Image (tube, rainbow, N blue to C red; front, side, top):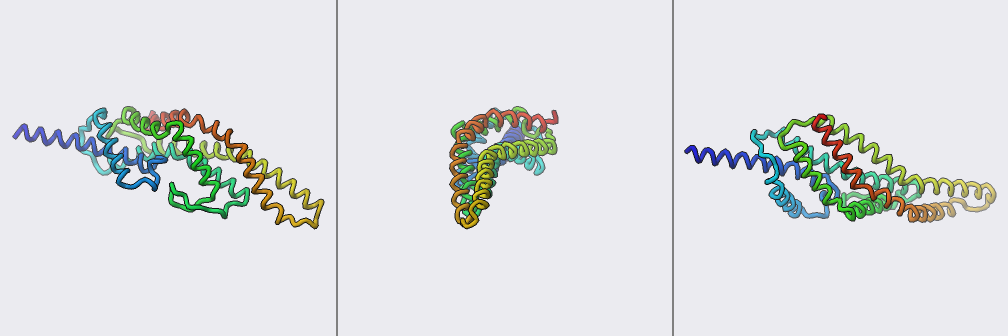
Length: 259
């Protein structure tokens, strides 16, 4: 009887640890770029969840307390925060593309985004796919899994965390990322502004010219050429994504620990 009781306690302990670990991994898969894409079948996501749980379970500190629903929600929230931290850079690039589409007059040209399943301006989707390509080329899918593994050492399962501070840090990172996104779009917007000024001068110099018929294609053409010229600069700025993500992740985990 004693042996059976000890066996049942061992199974319960390891089962609780695996369940909490799966909750944190599941949170990451729900929010992280690429992993949360709707183009990935649900069966594939479930398989990835099980494989990652089994791979990380031997290195995780065993949970000695019975987990509660609140604890499962906290572990899922930690995984979601890590995934959102990586997604903010993609969202910033998408926002920059949407802003450019509005400035160029292409906001009405929308297409179905295969990643989110929503209709977005075509330049927003282009910027999103460009950012995803750069992140994947830098090994971002591996960097996110490494961050998840590091979080288990920094904030072990069932350890006390300060979620309010973590959310505040996530908002701070979001504000800084969207400022960077505006900087991405700034060169193209500046060129479009100069082009509008030139068209305005031409309209005053030649009133008989149909400015509306001329301005629309010129504005789109100038904007696309400016965007093509700015892509190498955007690529160089996105090249430091892994380092920025690592720094922001470390800051986020310190806030969660209350440090």
